[in-house]
Amino acid sequence: QKEVEQDPGPLSVPEGAIVSLNCTYSNSAFQYFMWYRQYSRKGPELLMYTYSSGNKEDGRFTAQVDKSSKYISLFIRDSQPSDSATYLCAMSSGNTPLVFGKGTRLSVIA
Amino acid sequence: DVKVTQSSRYLVKRTGEKVFLECVQDMDHENMFWYRQDPGLGLRLIYFSYDVKMKEKGDIPEGYSVSREKKERFSLILESASTNQTSMYLCASNQVLAGTDTQYFGPGTRLTVL
Image (cartoon, rainbow over all chains, first blue to last red; front, side):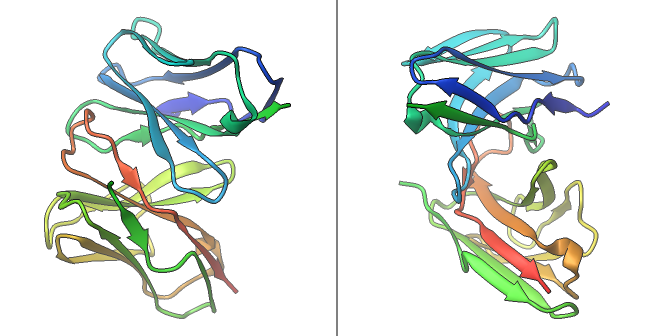
């Protein structure tokens, strides 16, 4: 079983839709959870960061962590064509490099 | 504004050539990373460095080496390039290895080995 599983998509939604992106993981030591966004031909950039379990909201984006289920989610409300990108989940147990999911490619159609 | 720059955006090399990929960061970060990104495989860590002249193997170090002679510069070396090393190479840096610290990525180098 891979440490981090993420559905690669592609996921295509109409503008204004609520998008749900998810990752599951197997390492119960993971405590730090991040979502990176990567536009075509660019490097990934940090979108959301969450420590341990719980929710975090930033504008149209909400990150959720459920450590009991080893499941993390990113919700995008009122999705825009500018949200079209690849979204990578990433996680770490502490003083170790991040472990990344494979990324989900999202297209928001105007 | 943090900047991680990579020496080339696109590179074409021949099998057997020695290839150098350069990465420079301007934020005095302690840690630097080299990844490769392939469709269906995601980001895979090749090597990282937490200090000058220090290096640690990542998940896929075979066929690669690295050099960090100065804090701001981290080089990835392909001693004898092969076609299966055709990929997007991404460099990243951060200050603290602990998961609390975001990694800043460069724009990537798309390497093609013919």
